[in-house]
Length: 576
Image 1 (spheres, rainbow, N blue to C red):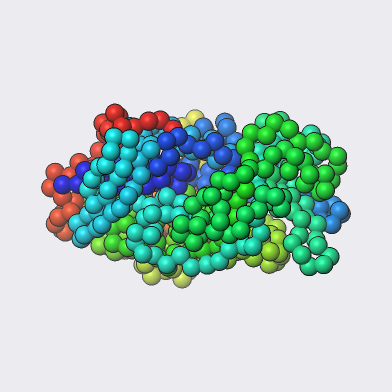
Image 2 (tube, rainbow, N blue to C red):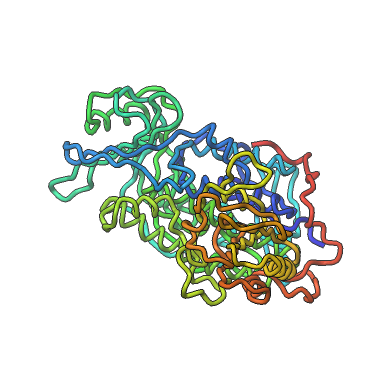
């Protein structure tokens, strides 16, 4: 028997998300990190609206909203001339906006959230090697108390750009590197620019040499920014010669452990580029970093997977990296949980690569282009550009988990993000609910729309068929059009009092909409009939008569993973 169901390697935002979601889904896991204590770096600071939606579903968004700062827009200067101000305004139906939060604060919030599920990060514990067989993974760990052998059913590598899991799987990590070296600084500045606005200042080299760049992202606090800029010449080391880990695997990406920039380096850049006389102070942290753009040829092999920087690295343009990695973990965790419980269809875990690698490829390509030409150079309306940067347009329309599409259905299509809406009236609630209130659980949710002409018993029959196909791991809600009677309805229900659900989904009376645990549409069916609704779930769930024998689609006898009990390895665990 396995010592744990899932071993997560790496306790950055991606690994913490994976572990927290596994525990929320009732799956036993351990999470290890080679660092004895977390870094206090403001490295990844941009929080996208889609990530806030993810944290809403996880039950973490309240804490994030209390800690983060709003990103209201961007100010730009090019060759000394001020450009148009960009307002980061999204459509009113999008529940969250853009935000900033230092990475160390994000990690602390995620670690505290994980701790509520009874799991702590095991620090100063490094993955040395691993080997897998058809039934599980054998991992060798080295920690404060010596070496340890761990048998797990699945392994998830969230161990960054120099991932040992990726190297152990022999995955190709093709791409290249930017020639420039950059520096970061977490400082306070005394300019009087509008609060909450990012700053991008570019001065082109008329001779065709490297451009001079200053990018500032506002952080929580008065006058506090994370500034990034081209590194001063005395801080630049040749590629591969840095004291960091880049020389070990040929990947020149991330922070270097050599000399860090001081206030004098940052002040020199401000003196050259700032739009008004500006003094930097209160340097909290600084570093030199290099940028590569790479992506793996596959997101896993067998029972081991990679996510986040272990799978894709790219320029930080548009704050896409950490957010993309968090959504990798969010996509993978619910699938692993079903596989561990033995209720997953045999090919469910294969859909992780099929769904997330195209997203990674698009993000890598787009951020490389934007690093060279700027966001918006590819055209499109401002709203479409912002929706894309907010990661609200990510879709899985080519997912193998989708059955044939309903050609008459309005957007959103199967595979798209499930949009929110308001104005849903529950008979026990004094105020209208949001649709996201109904989708917040860890299971699939079936939404059945009933109009005045829909027979309630048909909705009940569809719900029974869907629950059976999903091994009971499904929530069902009826959404009633105004004027529809609920007297004979057995299902929990809300009334679409303001017609908001119908408008957001282009819904038809008698239609079924399936929403996955990660907030993407798993299918639509009109008219909803029991066999058809069950068929929407067949690519995800094993047939109900499948023996549970410990493989995907089967759970071993005596499996412990069905309950989210607290774990007991507290003697070797330390809080973030």
